[in-house]
Length: 102
Image (tube, rainbow, N blue to C red):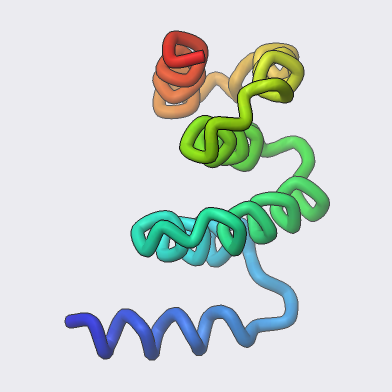
């Protein structure tokens, strides 16, 4: 239901200290609505608050690809690779996906 999703988004977005999972949900909401600039702001917030989480680096790559801005992607992927992709199969898959698209 679109109305419930919007209500949930507004309530979650008002939280001052968003958890990693709240940021991920908000980024997903903006991506679905093709609001890539808003999603990027939240990704950058996630990178500042959770710099050791590969997910936000991978989401940044995804958004940059969608916007056609690929110059920074190799450097971002190098950071992800240096973190050993947190030994997470989902992150590893996303890493290879982005690497293949770039």
